[in-house]
Image (cartoon, rainbow, N blue to C red; front, side):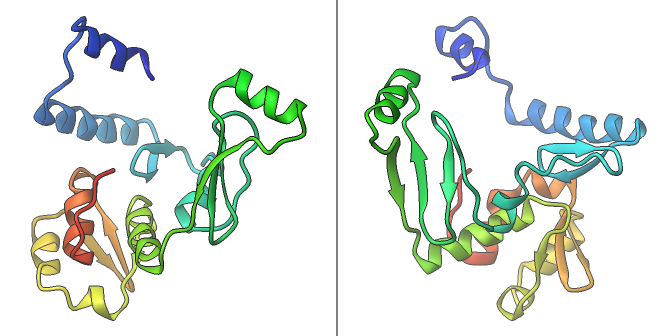
Length: 178
């Protein structure tokens, strides 16, 4: 849906390879830190006191309400998303019908996987409960500098955020793709 995606699909641009993406991502961390910015989530940085709060409910699993075309909502158990096309959304609302296109109720296992994944996206990281604390590969991740154990929390470094899917897979035994 982005201009870059359209350019790549038309052959007008090429997607960066993984090595270039990683180098640019890590360089963004260095440059933004030099300007007083801190990454508080894998793809968000701000100066102290200027964090955006719009996605905080997503990352913490709290309920949220989305209004408008393509908006997503979560009531604590069920996720819903609205019709994306403006005209379809407008017609549904004008006719007094729900604009919700679909919904899903994740299983407890899916919700735990999501909790682990979304927690590790943030600078606060994941609370280390017994199953994760005992993971044999955790010391390897720490030794390689991809994660840090800070008290009772497991926190990704920028290099770890680049490997987030693999880390969550190690922690949960489930393959994850963002």
